[in-house]
Image (cartoon, helix red, strand yellow):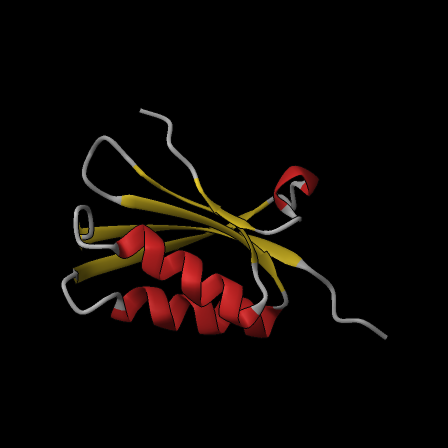
Length: 97
């Protein structure tokens, strides 16, 4: 039986914009097989919406806390989210501003 998919929304704060954080998050998600998106927010934080198994989301969170070498992650907030089928096909970098 396949493990149930779930979704989480992570909000990452610290020095996380202009340091390759979105590309890092995309590479990690692709490597572990999670779907969703990453985007910069106007307040300087980064939002990561991810769909995956509990284990995939656990690994993703650990990697988001670490971040790429140039980043300085100060906090990762995590919230349960609805599984949105439109993001289930892969992991993308979103640009909304």
